[in-house]
Image 1 (cartoon, rainbow, N blue to C red):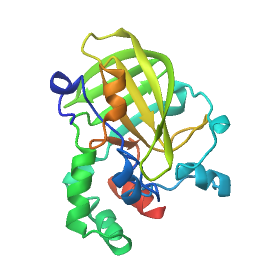
Image 2 (cartoon, helix red, strand yellow):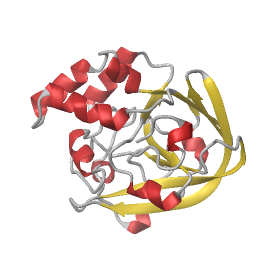
Image 3 (cartoon, rainbow, N blue to C red):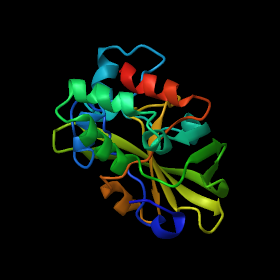
Image 4 (cartoon, one colour):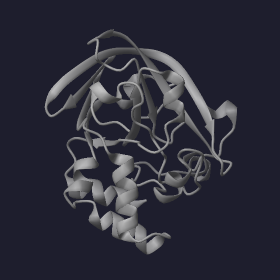
Length: 225
């Protein structure tokens, strides 16, 4: 689990696609629970819904640029801690198979991170921990397709550090339920120094939403899907 860069620059964050209607591998339980907690600003057709849930053909997968995740992003972990996301947990309990307290515990493990802000511009990714920045420059390192136990799949888009602070992670991996170029509405991020180990991370998936959204707006987006 990822707590600090000192402690987790090797095994860090993971994305357990909590919200997919159908769970999958490491993200299997998450996928079912988090049936994606955000509303897209554009309409999804049937094909898009299938992709969102992890059902797609290999030839539908396209490379993506780091610019798809450009912007200023806030961690949702503090919002869970301070109670702002309590209505989301209650909403999940109404429609799921766990109690509100059980969902809160599950997402606490998933969202936990001390990186409360991430700023992405050009090839630079800046991680903020307690206001202290750590920056790396990243280049495209392809993508990996993960097959989950439930039969659905997910795509991790991977970038490798090419310069910047020595303590910045060597690899970052994005997952936002998209498999082709599009501007992300939110994302789960894994980072660390071992590319293959990150692909196995399944319990901790720090999640980021636009920094200009209020906590209430984030909660509304999570419940809108």
